[in-house]
Image (spheres, helix red, strand yellow):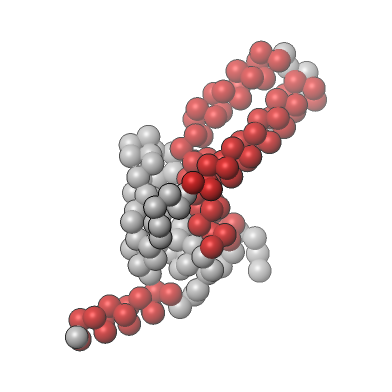
Length: 139
């Protein structure tokens, strides 16, 4: 299975798609939007997966974000300072600009990494959600 194709965890994480059906959006706005940057949908619009299964669910995503960003910062500054020969001030300055521009995307990726740990891809999730909806209407 290709790494960034529908059905892989990486597709769900980096495309910001529902971890169960890989079709529904997880956030109300686009990837680098600063309008409602932290507002996540309550449920997947396609398969009805609850994105908030319990209070404080995304607490672990903070640790993922911290570790991910920490290693990225170390490697970024090392690349620009030691390999490309930039001054330390210039390397840190560029790092700060990069992080300010990409903060929302990093936040969102961390949340998707966390929910993908617990939710398995199900290619028939949308069909199952539609059947449940029809059953509720028939009652």
